[in-house]
Length: 421
Image (cartoon, rainbow, N blue to C red):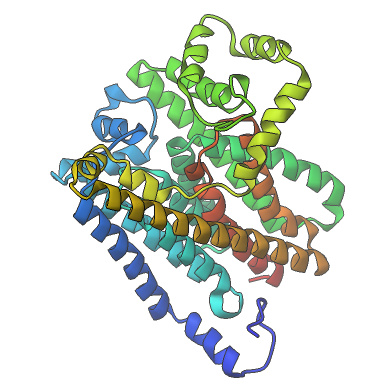
C-alpha cells in the first residue's frame, strides 16, 4: 500500500510512488491534458458564448467593462495578436494547467504525490473547458500561486516581497471571479471562530495564509469595483450579484432546477433595482415561511455536495458546435453518443470529486491527531465556505471548479506547515 504521509519501507509500492513523484511523468500528464483540450478546440473551434462572449468582446476595451477583473487583460493581450477565441483560450488555460501542476508538485509532500495526481485527474476531466473563452481556470491558478508564495516562497525573496506578490495574485483571482471574495469572507468568519476556540494551538503559517487571502480578497473586490466605476457600470455589480441571489434562493423553487439561473431571477432583480438590496431581500424573505427557504436549500444540497460535470457541456453547447450537431445528417446517432459520453463523464467526475473530498478529510484527521487542529481545518473550512455560499447563491457545476482544484493544494500546504518545511 502507498502510504499517504510518506511512511513505510521501500517496497514495490514505494518504487511506484517514486515514479509518481517524477516531475517528467507529471510534465507528460500536463502535456496530455493540454493536448486533449487543444485538440478538441481545434476540431470544434467553439465560439465564445454565455458570459464568455462578453469576455471576448470586452477584452481590451475598459469602457465596456462589467466583469472579468484583471485577467481580462491577459485575454486582451492574446486577442491583440490576432488569435482566434479558441486559440487564445487554449493558450491562457494551458498556462493555468502548467501553474496548477507546478505549484502542486512543489508543495506536495505526500507519498507518490497523491494530492498532485488528484489535481491532474480533475484537470483531465475538465480538458474540454480548455478551448472555451473562460477565466475560471486562470483565476484558480492565480490563487494557487499566491498561496504557494505565502507558505513556501522562494528562499531568496524577502518575506515582504513574497507576501506582496501573494496579495497581488489573490487580488487578480478575486477580481476575475468575485465569487472567491464571498468564499474568502465566509471562510475568514469560520476561521476566526475556529481560532477563538483553538488559539492556544494555532499555527502562524495558517493564520498568515488566511490573513493574506482575506487582504487579497478585499483588494480584488476593490479592483473590480474600480474597473466598473471607470467604465460607468458600477450598478452592474448590484444587478449581477442580485441575480445570483435571486436565482439561488429568492425566486427559486424547491423542485427540478432549484438554485439554477432562470429568466425570472433577472426580471426580479431588475424590478427591485429602485430599492436598497437589503430591504428588497428582507421583504422577499418575509413573503414566505422559513420552511420554504429551507426546502429550497435542501433541494440544492445534493448538487452542492456533489455538483454535476460541466466541461463537455459548455464545449458542446457553443453556438456553432450545437448548430453543426443539429444540422448533421446523423444527428440522432451523434446525440446518442454525446449522451453516453456525458453519462460516463458525470460518473467519473463524481468519483474524482469525492476522492478529493475524502483526501481532504483524511489529511484533516491526520493533522488533527498530530496536534494541529487549526491547520487541519483549513481545507475543510474552504469546502464549507463554498457549500455555505452556494446554499444561498446560484449554483452551477463550474462554480465549484475552484473548490476542487484548490482543496488538494490547501491540504499539501498545510502538511508542509505541519512538517515545518
